[in-house]
Image 1 (tube, one colour):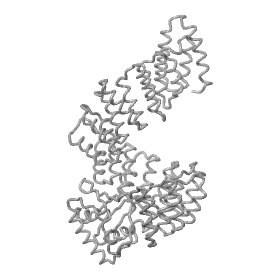
Image 2 (cartoon, helix red, strand yellow):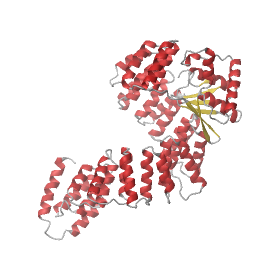
Image 3 (cartoon, rainbow, N blue to C red):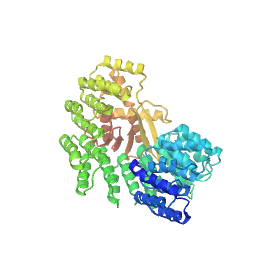
Image 4 (cartoon, one colour):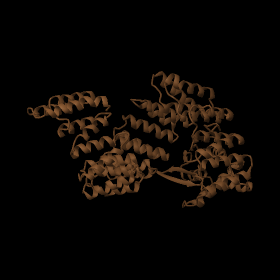
Length: 605
């Protein structure tokens, strides 16, 4: 609250204190409390407060302050400075009022004062109650303050408040937010009573911390044990998010079926999560079907579909939906435009991309952010206009970040532009030193020109600087289970059979005229050794296992954490033709749908 708003109240408070002894204020106080409970806007609360002061109720009256602070904090945008002033006038605020303020801070953009208020309670020997801990833990979760959160946990145990399901649910959320899913799971296992919030917290915690398998296992546990707890919309969104990250289409379909049976299908958040699931699983047709069946399509729904189609290589379809969105007078968001520019980038629509980029501010009132500039650099780089991409960066109104220069370096590696690539590298080494991906891109660039001395020098620099290359791995879903493959890995119980299958694949590909593109192997070794190294890339291990274990003709779906190399892209095209399989690979940048020896990216990725 601003000073000019505080002054009249302060003046009224002085008058109220002077005349507080005249008459019995109880009936007036009751009326004011009733008015505070019924009002839901700040102007009305201020009017009620002023009325109370004019009728002789002191500003620091604990009952008035209690209800006024509660009403203020319950507003959609709580005026914390107003509530803070009231609190400062109370010599001995009770636990309810302090809890209310802690809740207000915890739910605000700046939750740290909640922890300070907790320390004030401790200094005043005012013990927290079961309502204090959930708000405190929420503040700790938002601040990722593990140390303070653990001390709150210890205090709740000491004061025998951990039996409260609300406290336990808050502990679950706190540990999940801090990435300590083992601690979250331990709290979960020790809970005698679990409600739907409990299950949601632990499932969402695993899903958000890269442990989607555990999230799905817990959901199955709910269904198998026939708990009284019924999963709700929040549960479904968490599960669908986990399935989307894993690329676990079969498991996602099971969740979808449960959603239909349980009557949760009308929830727009669930519809958006389903679009995201099918998009990230490479089934754009099903994403469109979900979209078509949604009774209430929000901007998020349109954006999810546009982005999903774009990353799956259906750029023209994505742009068509964007045009329909414009016709429907729906205002696109910043993320919508990222999807639109991405679609232009991945199908080489340079002029159209610039048209949309220029329309952002003029027609949609969106000031381009660094992500949009990154899309434009990518658009020019992929089209081979590397010099124009560099000029575009130099003329940006924003300071180019590491992602911008990394995009340019990637384009230089793609089009073998060593000089400009070294310029990008010189910027990256200052902005983000030690990023392993940058070393790999520059190594690709040098190796493509057989400049092995520079490759070796770069590798020595990586070793000296302690930079470790991110290992490539690929996920494959089969029979409701997700398998993880790493290049050259032999930990799978069926390793021998997998490598025999790789030999068979190699022989059949050679008959089709396959010749390995060994420039992708960043080492100065014999060509035969390079070919062997390429054969054992993680996606090829996953494909070999998929061919062994799936039904003839069944699609094989793979999620890879790195960009598919040029040789693997060529090999997978031929595998799809020779073995008559659809193979869908989701790599770091997009989807590749291989069928009959052709990829939807048209070798433009």
